[in-house]
Image 1: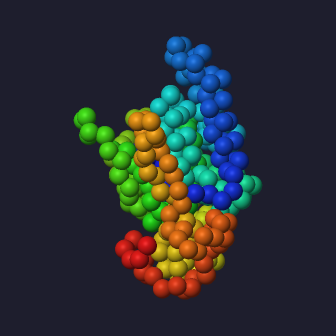
Image 2: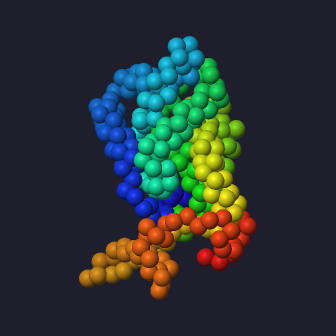
Image 3: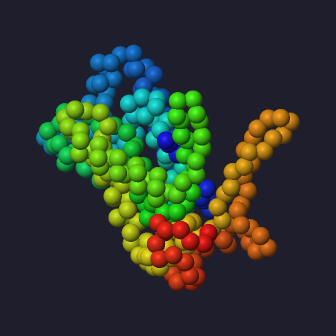
Length: 284
């Protein structure tokens, strides 16, 4: 199960999200196709620019906290990370502004790297990937939009199906898996940097917490029902000339056909009655 899109449109062009995706792809293409067939050279490259805990401890290579965020271990590693950034990044950039989002992203990545370092400071295995920074984006998204709808693709043998689930379920399960796997895996065994994921996610929640509190905390959830405070997008498959295609439209427009910029204004806490918790149901 993995997400393919959300129903939460952003109200400004996410230039930083686009730039981060382009930067990650460009950097990956600058080294991986050439070094993929040369394992020794590729390993040396990762050791130089990835975050190696034991080297970080001895030499204080702070730069690798940042350089490691823009390196990936393979095509699927890159594609998976960029997909998550594409889905969740625009809404956090909408919330924080372009510069604020960039600072938030990099800070989440730094905390994620330190989380992995603290899990085993003596490890000589380099950590690479944008996963920790993107985990921060996911944590912030969960706090602000816990009941935003996420479309996930589920593949069971030959059955391929898209389900729509609330963000809290998808992101909560993801975070839980990072904790379980992090506790179960020996940090010296290599593989996935679960503690970087968990650390980045927690950092994202904490960084966004002041904004959530300023908007009313639980009252903000009650006012918005845990959903985005603007119209969501509906995806419907239509047929034109026998060819399936996807058409999107704004939901719940009705007679009050205000532009999205107006619908995006944040309602004040307690402005309308709703469930006290976004995890419960209630009126949509």
